[in-house]
Length: 405
Ligand SMILES: Cc1ncc(COP(=O)(O)O)c(C=O)c1O
Image 1 (tube, rainbow, N blue to C red):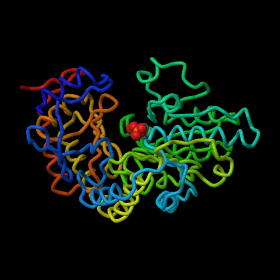
Image 2 (cartoon, rainbow, N blue to C red; image 1 turned 60 degrees about the horizontal axis):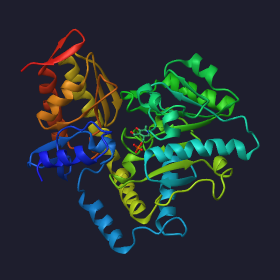
Image 3 (spheres, rainbow, N blue to C red; image 1 turned 135 degrees about the vertical axis):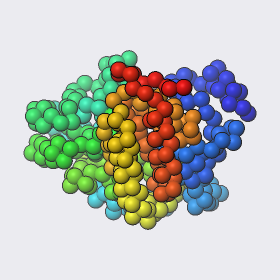
């Protein structure tokens, strides 16, 4: 199959909800992807923060193959040996007692939104149904998750969404204090806003969230789908704020490509949730939990490496900023990084692709990078070299960027 035949078939039969880059990937190895013409790319987006162990990881491949030969799926009608083990592992990492397993980050968000309402309803408090979320926040595209996602472009065609959601700007402490009341079921926040432009919450604002949720009794949902599980060097990024969330969403990294998500639930919330309140056919099946157990074991061992690579990455991106005034800020933490530009980021992303580096544009002016957590020093240096060239190949004219040649 050629690039042309693949794209032509999709154009006819795949619903056109994605604006794909014109490249067909057929194989991966570590931080590299290979296209249909055999060309290699350095993958600094890793399936949007998913392939944390890199591509075609031999150990992960072996456990998936072994599990596939043994038993893949039985449903949640019965027990199997792995869900409890994975839940216990996530509990040790987060301090939250229980896990509900699902298949994606969005489903983890949906579960947390439901569990928050159920928490109040179970106690006879029927007027605490509202949510507070943050401007620039992204939590998914289903009706509930979309209702707490800020971007009007994603929301507007699908209204009315669930009522009672107030959005607060991530620096507006007074706005936060006004929005979170005795009617709020839960506040949901990403400790580092990924889609919103790799924006970390400021320590002051993070502290204000902890304070107002505590004083009003509002449940705190930390959306760790993108920034969690080692991405920033912490098991969960909320731990760097000293938060004790009531609910935590997990996705992306946990399966390193095998679809699985989880809602982590504090025991005080868990006691208010009962059999039949929520469910899913696939959630936590043997294949996905086996993969996740393997990934979590690897992540623990990778933490010192992530810390070292994260520091190096930040330094090199700051070097780039000194050389390219079009970079207005270097954002993020660990191996979750964004270069905010004074202009649209797409020409830089396109130039990087042409030079064999995969990064992506988010929030219009941000080049986002989420490399595998196994990325090496040599690969980081190579990516910085390509970005240097990509930034040099565009010139700033007013508020637009044009390719030079
Ligand atoms: C913070 C956050 N929450 C939720 C989601 C939705 O996850 P998924 O696309 O796996 O359903 C995303 C996806 O990018 C995300 O970044």
